[in-house]
Figure 1 (cartoon, helix red, strand yellow):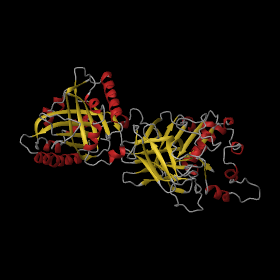
Figure 2: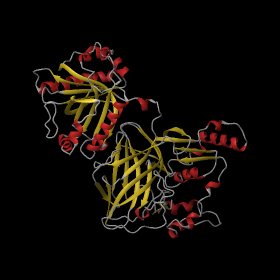
Figure 3: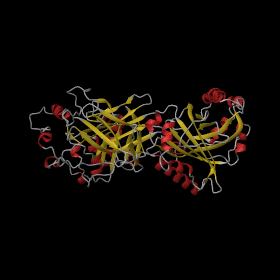
Figure 4: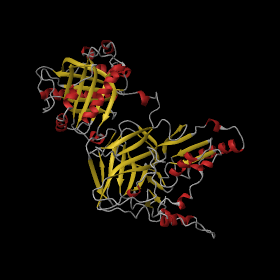
Length: 618
């Protein structure tokens, strides 16, 4: 508390003694350690309890929101004690409040009755760990595990992007961003497309440089905003009701790690000395512990990693409030954060995956995609008006009456987009693609029976009747820059329909390997280009599509030739041309695995028009 990350605390430490210095006896001067013991010496070592000697049954209550005081220490105690019977409970309320709520009092009594009176109670059915998955202030769900961190935790790395996003794909080229060391900040953001949950220890690794200074104090917060851009707040430090998701602090001269105690997800700093002052232009790596936290993000929410040289909500709290503040920093000039290339700056996040077999784990959007041509003789203007106007409006109305119809995206390829480095089909080109998203194949089939669909089916004709189609579901998704993708307007989309070869085997291990290898190639060659997002969708077309599409206008469509569909999103034609102008990109794009026949495959480049968007991850 007194020296978080090596940064002196200047408010709570000096106010807190007023809460207990009321007696006539002597008490320890809590400010002495900060003043006279700046390093982790015998003074601080003497205050570490002999946790390993605690062997009695233990019931540990902890609050997620006590960052900077008790949350981290309580969990460290849980790790250190030797008790065979130990129960950990991490709640979402202010730290003292939950312990006197009826729910907690009943559990405390059950624990004491079990281990002091020898009574048979509910404790025998308790999970060893119970923790709250927080969503917003005092709203969350209890989760359970056999130990903490939960064994199912999957640590994922999120790398900064030039658009100030966070991506699971590392950037191959160096970039940097700077901010004023005293008043400024920078935020790297992850717009969430699918539900995301994390709980436990996170770590932020940064490569940093100080301009105009020899040292740096770094203040980190994880924050959440909802789909309307409003910050979602949580309890913090007993008296604050507007805290962030999580905190981290570090003085750069204290970046030296205690390698024996550090874990990949939880760095420990030795704090036995200050390293040499930073030199002009020197870039150094730092690993910053994000204090334990939990949060659930729904589709449309955004995770922000905010890096600054000052306290969260600086100057917003009264000067005598028991809130951790750090007025005495070493910051001046500007801070530079380097990332990409050999600067492997990243956030390591403890993601809790969906329960195996649950709907969120299994259910993927079903895509019904059809590529077609206009009615012969129609002008570009006539076709575009009918497709993006009349047909789009009809589909909107159907989607409002048919809940399983979740999304509809149009790709318009006329007039043809002119590119320098990518050649589309020249003879008898395709004009458009319609891709509709459904909750399931059975829901799609049932929707064909809906009265409103039957009333409109086949009445609006705008294509020549020749079409290729595929029913598919996402197999691999790569989001190169989530922020740029979420902000795209009038972007361009390449849809690549991969024709089946003689070696194509639906559902085979070979097909799965081919798709993974193809996606790996796409990630390697397109990283650092203008590609925003890539999805490879594998075919799930039923064996007898004529029966599935019976009595619908889609019965005449060729549903059997295509084995997979790739989608490539770019912000504009210039970025697309730049990407395909890079060495090896075009060749890698055109070279397909043996499960697919390149000569029979079809690609379409056009403007993307989102007509229906009930789900953001489509």
